[in-house]
Length: 446
Figure: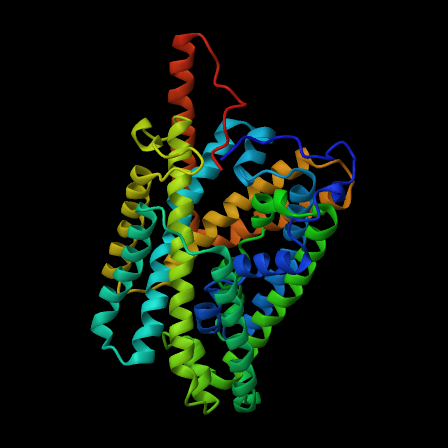
């Protein structure tokens, strides 16, 4: 990844003068939807209903509202400062190398907890759709990890357009599922409304961060838009409406149609299709969901590999992992490290009976930590008192609130932050012996 560079037009010139051959509005919406929706649709409605009951509807509403300033601030950053390095680049520029290092570590060591979640989800949907015994799910989930890992070793990746098509197909299936399950919704399923108290709602809100993570995608692809200042904010707003509406509708039918059964099964979309009396849907839903999960894992591992190599290039990981950090190269050594981390999480997941909620919370707590740093950096980078700056101010308060809600899940991000600080102390001691301070302008670890 590259260091933060001044954006074209960052001095006030209109970025709409970019070449018209770049990404347009429709493509921007598709990319944002692919990043924001992802695999959360496969599991979160059921888990949230199990955690908070009918009050999970409040969690969806709250996280949708919280996403508005967060998405708006990222849109402002992406429009004004196109940089593929993303959040870590902004952190390095605004807050220095330690904050950037912590951001990179949170992605690599914390967000990696989501890898086993995605693989188990894909395995469960396939197993249910084709009738594989539950004893085979762990091995099927392991296969979901191995296949994209091997593909990435050879530099083979699913195309971005294929990923967009799959996400669009998943969204279409959700619309169908909501439509067929709606007649099965029963008013009595919404009482009692707060069976697990407000603590359950707070936990559900943190889980739904998984659903609305991905707004930073605009910072990575902003340079590809034909008119970023015009297109990115509009694409962000439309995606907010579509994503929030999709999750709210799905949550309503999950609670209303499944009642107390919500969250006790492994495959909420299949449960809803069954509740709606649709016999042909399970196979299609299972296959599409599994392929989407496989595509997400492919992107996960590719990103982790490049990030690990970039961290090593900056001395934040052992230099041995730096090979392949350059553009176009395959970071095989860093991929091995990334796969080892994901497999370690997978082993713990297996040992704990594949209870996915703790790992979703680790993943989302790490993302909230990243977003908190990103919003603080945005406050320092964006012009004061502009709409984007005000959104960053509001979002920074919201993300701090989400950190407080994360509770025990913050143990992993906190440990990672201590590790980043320890690396800073060691590096500063070495630099003092060499007589040169740590360079604040080194390549981004994002």
